[in-house]
Length: 534
Image (cartoon, rainbow, N blue to C red; front, top):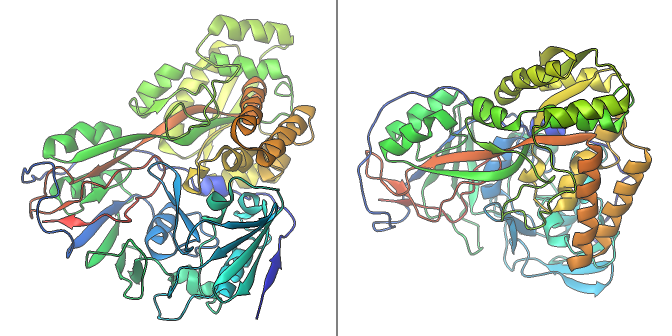
């Protein structure tokens, strides 16, 4: 029977960005040795076990609700959307779809499913499963809702075809948004999907414990990227020292979130280390309804007062860049545009702006989450703002406690925290809407919603979605400029992510991963198509 699910009313995020924040980096240790080999894929491919040291843990693997770095990374192998994103360059490819969407009219598209696609339990995939998965992902209160707003509805036309209605004519980012909706059986309960989801990807879950996650090949998979190894094993190693030790000893072939001070150690042991610039930010948020933060000159003064290079070197061991735009200046973000205001450490300019604002700096509280990098950065921020005349007290709490207090109405001053929505995609609209949409961030936290500047930003974002090509880029450029000039919430640093692997050389057992493995600039590990080599 045909099913039709219309879009729910727009709701705000409720702390999802905190859940996506990168973990802090600490320590190193362990010893071991690998066997040297030429940098090639000579040897037998597949038939082994891909072992990963993960920095994260979770109890929620539900493909339609999770924001966990571990679950999102594992699910890349297990569940598919109609389209998938390659997080190495943020390109899209057909997954459960047989090809590109067919435009029926300006707001209607049809997508045919991959012929013969089955879930790992052997049941056929039907268009109704796609429709019901969209309903789960767009359910009121879900953190995915703002990202899926441009999709008005998904309906099953017949068993193998879905009809997609968009709220924006000729929507240019349709495949990127459809990649967020992971297709699961309509009959599956939310409890089952939270514990161990069933999907159509090349792998399926075998066992999930607090200590590890194990995947085995999905024998029902009929796509073009089949599993070639016997197993993928994720070892939960939240402690950085444990991850480094396992990597160096070769217990894990791949290790994520490699600490900066362990990179040379691991390279010396024979591992390859990919350091990738990502969108992940360490941002400053102002309570713009509270004086003096309601004065844009004071906000700008704070941004000019920060010694970015000291924070990069001392707090992040060089593994970050100072922003010149809301997006990083990196090929992975082709919509980058140098903003009209670029903040560098300029104490004289900061002092002049304070004088122009006509305020006398006083006692303030700098709230931070308990991310290690943020804690390290906060010391320099305090020193910089104290020099400007403020008397800064640092208050550090867990992300949950921090956002509960702010959402509850606490009259905070400043917040320094991490966030990274690029694990869902990297188009400017998605990244802008995460913080600046009509959601909890703007309504309750920053409270910039309703200002004339926010209205202008929202209008430019809406116009960008309706446009394409150069016209679309011009609207986004205006957004980037406006944010740099108003800085209600703005990146202080944009971090790099390091991933280590036995790729050029084999570990002590003579095993490595194929040369197509690459680290990515967001949380998680991209393993589709990767095999062991022995």
